[in-house]
Image (cartoon, rainbow, N blue to C red; front, side):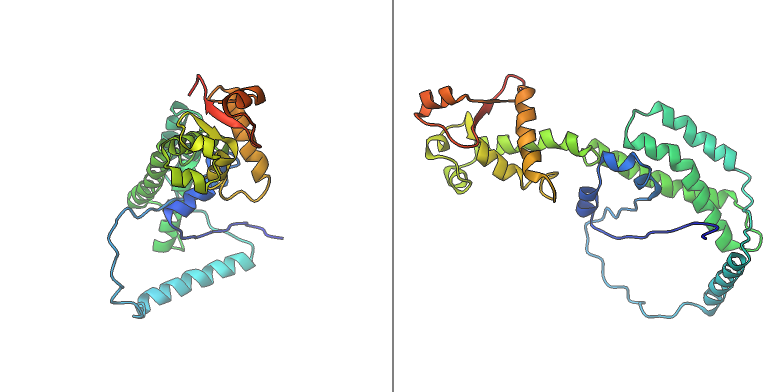
Length: 272
């Protein structure tokens, strides 16, 4: 049996790929809020570290070995040492007071856990400084709070840009964007997507199969592995139900073009 379960996961990725893998739904079960997001905002390509390959100092190696050995001994004996944390209630109250003032959503979930995250990071700093009698001081606390607050601020920026929307919330903006692009597309682009010749010169009607083909390349549909076709069809149906789009009836298609097309023909709805 695992007496004191604990796991640390460290990962590195580009911002685009990371936020493509998560959404607002990822915060509901508490998994993503347990991570800290450390983002590099610079645009310059950094040079190679000129000091790479240099061995760490002997003092550092000895200290790490002492901490590791002490930790292993405690684990074998199924024991632990409490960290002296005189500010734990103060920090907890600070973050708990902020959470209720925030709207429901990912940021509020993150904020409710922020105090505990600060406590854990500050405790690790105290252990690294003095593992036999670890005590959190103000410097540990301030450093941990800056790290957690920076992570929360990054998520706040991402939520404002729509990166943390739920998958369902992302679908309609993606559909709108696709329709807008297609309404402005040139004849060559429309033809390459399979648009019927009768529709290529129009800017008020689009073939459903053309919308689907372009929409399938957009997030959140692009990376779907299951039920992708159904999700795309549902997005079109939902847009019609909300009067964002209107699907022409077979009679309307025959009156305008003398025929109908598989996948239907769509125009902008009143709610567009």
